[in-house]
Image 1 (tube, rainbow, N blue to C red):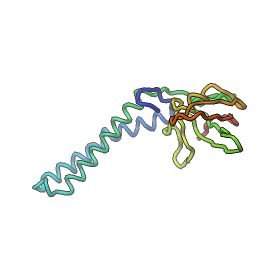
Image 2 (tube, helix red, strand yellow):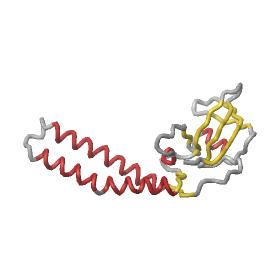
Image 3 (cartoon, rainbow, N blue to C red):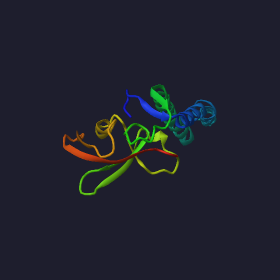
Image 4 (cartoon, rainbow, N blue to C red):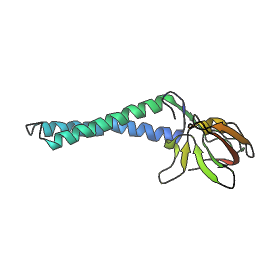
Length: 163
């Protein structure tokens, strides 16, 4: 996921993020406004820890609102890809770095993972993600890692992510 790139999301993930955004813009924003108002009514703001805590919470929440708005604006909503062995966003990919050193991850956005799923996530725009996107099982791919090192991976498996 990059600041300017498209983010692939399932409809379920998109709806979940939209619901979170609606909650943050509505009831949760109002709760913080009420906390700030109540703390402000207590008097001296310099030494009012309740006021400062509420303002910090407001800042964090507004940052999350901006993040969600950006992600939803850039989202490409799609169905789970076909189980055809072709690597694309929404696939769980297993790669071999050589010598039997395997890694299994979701190619896509972390927001697509169901709660409790601990898969690593690689963006399709990452160095490895871009290199393997569109390739199939058995393909060996060489790419340049962010540190400038050339790495090779073999695609062992690619299957649709199922929640």
